Image 1 (cartoon, rainbow, N blue to C red):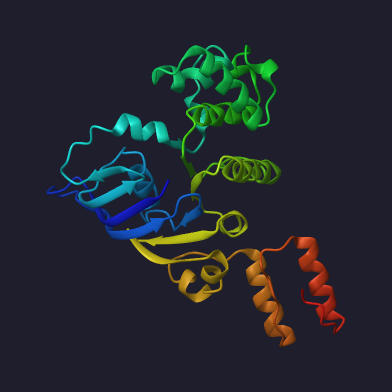
Image 2 (cartoon, rainbow, N blue to C red):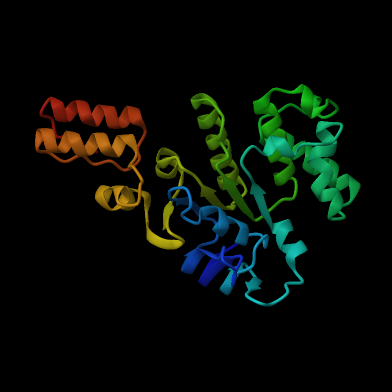
Length: 290
C-alpha cells in the first residue's frame, strides 16, 4: 500500500499564543512494500508525521494518501475505521496497552471490534502468536504474568491480528537490552518480508535505519531535510551533524579507516563477517574486495 504526503502542514493550537508548526509543506512518497526509516532529533516532527498515517491527525493543509484512502485538510473522513484496519501502529512500550484477562482476548480484541467472524479470529490469533515467536500454550494465561519482552510480543500480535497492509513502528525497541532490540527488529523485518508489508520505522537508532530500511527520510523542524537510500544518506556526515544526528558506528569506522590508510572500502550492508574478511584483505595488501 503506497503512502504519499502532498504539501502537508500541521499546526498545533492554531490562532492561539501557543501555535506551533509541527509539519511544514511536507511531500514524499513511500512505495508499496518498502521499508522506510524516519529519523530526526526530538521535536523534528516524526511523531506528528506518524499520527497522520492512520488518521489520528488530519493535515492543517495538504493531503495524505494511503492506498485508496485520502485524508485532507478541513474535510471529514468517513473511512477512518476502514483505514485503521489497514494501518497497524506499534507505539513505544506497546505492552502498556494490554488490558484483557488472557493473551487470547488481547490479541483478538481488534478483530472482534471490527466484526471479524469467530473462526477467522481463532485462525488469526494462532498465526500471529506464532509469528511473534510465542507459544500457543500461552493463550489462556494472563498477559500480566508474562515477562516484559513476552508482553510486548503479545501487544504486537494484537496489531498483526488486524492483518494490516501498512505497519508503523514508533521506537519499537525502546527499553530493551541490545540482544532484545536485535531480536525484535529481526522479527519485524521477517514479518515485513513474509507479509509483503509497507513498513515505516520511526527511530533514533541510526544502526537500525542502516540495517533494515531500504530508504530513509530525515526530518528537521517539521520539514524533509534529506532523503535517499541509507548508505547515500549516512555518508553525508556533516549534513547530518548539522541537524543533531550521528552516523552509524560502522560508517564512522569506515570513514576513519579510509582516511588513515588512504584507501577505499566497499560497504554494501554485507554481513559483518564478510566485511571483516574484506578488511583483513585490505590490511594484508590484498585486493579481494568482493
